[in-house]
Image (cartoon, rainbow, N blue to C red; front, side, top):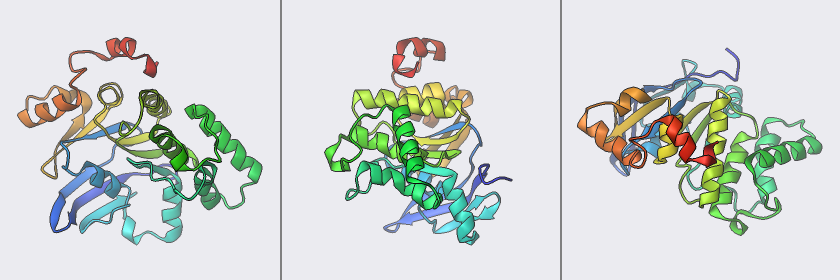
Amino acid sequence: MSDSNYSIELKNITVIKNKNTVLDDISFKVPEGITTIIVGHIGCGKSILLKTINSIIVPDSGKVLINGKSYSSMSASAIKMYRKSSGFIFQDGALWANKTIYQNLELPLLYHFPDITRKEVNNKIKSTLDMLGYEEDVNKRPADISSGNCKLISFARALMTDPDILMIDSPETSIDFSSHGKIRNIIRNLKARGKTLIICTYDEYITSMLADYVVVLFKNRIYASGQYKDIVTSNDPVIRRIMSHVLDKVSNFDGDILDLMNPDLS
């Protein structure tokens, strides 16, 4: 299996924070090449689950398996190869405050491609920012740009190595209307390119139009998971309550109508 084709599986994962169990015996295999949406009420552990899938958070028990091998037993070189093929977009952007936008973006390139030339770095940064519609001065620092632009830069940084797996935490949080439309388009384009996407979101349009697979968290456990159509048509009261919260504005519309209603995604 090539370094760009990874399978990710969680087996009996438990995470404890401040003596509270935030993930309880989670087992889940990430579907490859499609978009998975993680939903659940506030505080149910969605962000923790996403960070555990990416091995940013080390579970207290259980294993994260990459191509069937425990992440904790992988060599440093294998982990580096995996990191090059996966990207993480944090809820708050998580940019280096003491570095410029340009310096934030060049970091993954310099780390993963030590022989890269300055011209290649410049070209990659420019092409990525052009694709995302970012027009601010790259010599500014994160504090000098809007929260929406910080989120766009976090997407750009994650895309620097052209990863095949992207994990996105709350793309709709702390952004303005214009940035919201851009981010929806970015996610839609990534899906069209066959990327494996795992997204925690309350965005009704991302969920209703882009989800292939849904994981429903309830009381810190996976309550249900399955194909989007099966989840949204479930009669289970817990699933219906959670999904109605996410899909409040669009539950009665099909995808074709939503496309016409939402030009940002066209």
